[in-house]
Length: 210
Image 1 (cartoon, rainbow, N blue to C red):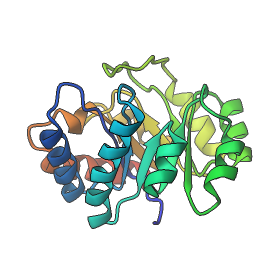
Image 2: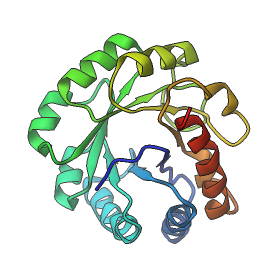
Image 3: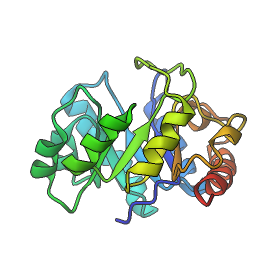
Image 4: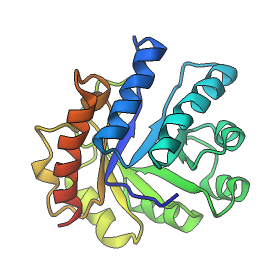
């Protein structure tokens, strides 16, 4: 599948019934997300695999690449489009060798040096942030927008801004060089994921086209 990083949904199923979680993803796909990362840090391998199969059936219907967070084994077992790795995960070059060059490899980076290393190791896109404080259950270290601009200007693969982003705080990302935005709560906690995704896609396209 083609990599389009414009509107990247990172999932969070905290306090959600599985049926609600899957319906939220389905509506977000209908609303226009272009990439989806399944991030489930508290599931067993079997639970993660089972959920990934169900999510992939939805994303495949909408021709949206499914990216698996951290778990290369789950990505390979489900034939997902790719995997996203952080700085403390398995080395990117190793992951690339395991997955093959036809799969998408994403990397979280917070500095230009990390971004350069990720690019050289074979990353296809970079998630840069957190731009703003987040309430998801991950450790966040804020990344200045100037750093985002520096990375986007010097690394020839798409840079995606992530961290606390929603419809109200995207203006500072204009002219940053970002080719997309990644959101979690803005869609996962929305009462109307389809409409929210459509609104965010429009705003993200303005940023990506600048």
